[in-house]
Length: 391
Image (tube, rainbow, N blue to C red; front, side, top):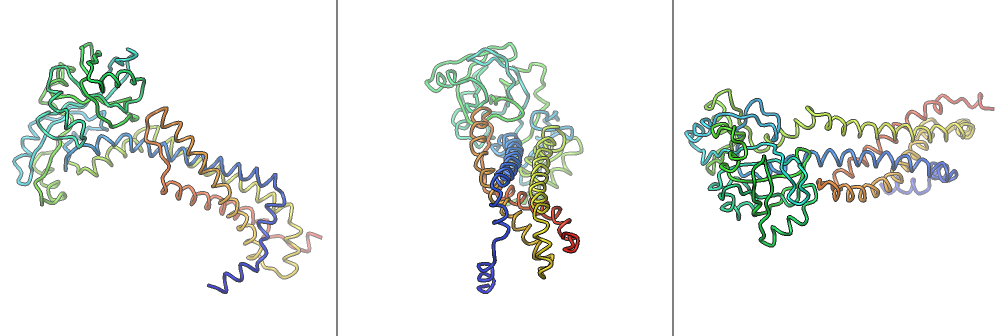
């Protein structure tokens, strides 16, 4: 290892010398790589925010198993199944509780601006613990009052004055489905791609908002198990006992069920994946142009090296050295710029858009691969260069 390091120290950094000799070309190349990296960072960030924002409610639900309709598509489109299946689930040894949840998108008037917007309304039995949210647990008795809801303070939109009034204990009323409703408390989950915010209330209040909705048709079943029971065995038992008109998922599977919908069944998931691919291709083209131009402009020098006895492997190493230098130097501004863009986007949309180490390493790896591919393409002419043809 020491000998290898000493050999590297004695080696002339030909790749860096060639890049730094044409500083204008170097800056253009770094700008192009940084642009490609920013594009990949933003697309990966949006994709992560898509999955995280749409599964935060799933994470907050206090259950080991979830019962859904086979026709369910995602949390906002759960379809319904008969509540009788939850009563049947209680017959299975190991099941501690099986609670019903009602979910629907609802239009309401912003209590501050009085403009209509879409929010996700959730109804549950306030005598049971179904949310792992401290604010909801503390205020479960509040939603027992008629036409009373809890509101997500992290919703997307202009709610500052209304939230301040609620925090001061003042009454804030609005209209939901042409029904006057009181906002009596707050909790925090956050906006998502499904809706601008979330309302949580009792099952009875939910059914008042949707009078055509039957209490026997539930959107989601939350099953809690007794300690010591195996999840896989209980899932098998529930699926076989409840019949084909419902499907049982573990919590991890329920979260993946939501992610799969957004990734494969919607245009937005495809667009973000396509954006990452486009950023990668843009980077490949830009780096190829730079390295190809460099090879063409120094083709006689490379031919001279070959005439002096240097093999193709050495010359390829010079080009790949340039590619790696470009990848590292271009990645630095390409990783710094998204920090500000993430901040601006997060404040504007209330979406969970943050830089992560895993994402930075992913983009760095893609940048290295991108530059190495470009270097490999650019060296095709170099390998076939014959010193006799150059002079």
